[in-house]
Image 1 (cartoon, rainbow, N blue to C red):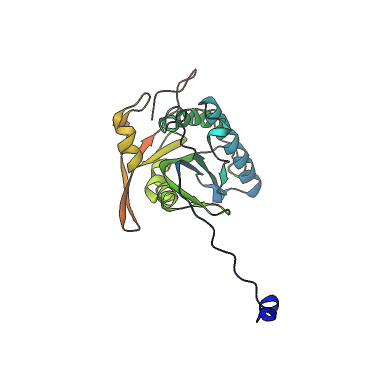
Image 2: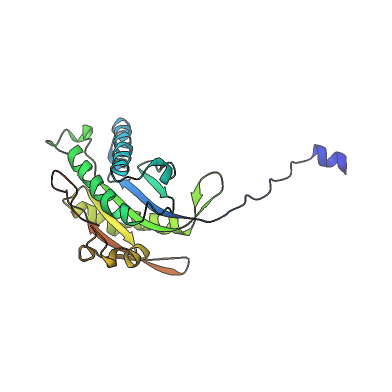
Length: 223
């Protein structure tokens, strides 16, 4: 038996220990990336990460406050650690307004040849909850909710109809715990119900906020 064990199939590794960690979740997705050529996609990705880095830095959210950006091909995922100096309100204001401003500046100028168009418009979702990690990546119901809200047809339609280069969707949890209280820079009246979805037997609602370009010289109080 011992010889068979040594020469036989390897035993499967023990299951990874999975522990939930609370994170504020922000995910972004570039509109129409599948219609772009690969060189243009590469440039859009570089631009997106540069603008995200700048928006977070200008909002005072340092690398030690968050995990490394997670690549999603045509977007990115940001997981912010639960620290007192980084409340969830900071993502709604000023991170998102700053990001909208940076996008608008990037998109300034006449429309180029469609095949070489480097202009970019994005959808953004903000949620929060328990996130799991198994050493290969992050997963869990909270992320499922965030990505379902980010990728829902209603959010895509809202961005197509918007003049702004960015639309923001927040989860019901974020709306009820943050938005409706009207913290500094967050106007609850600017949000409206966008979509209802069902996941693992629970209903979730997403709220939409168009984010217009702030005036020069600073980010307009949005949310």
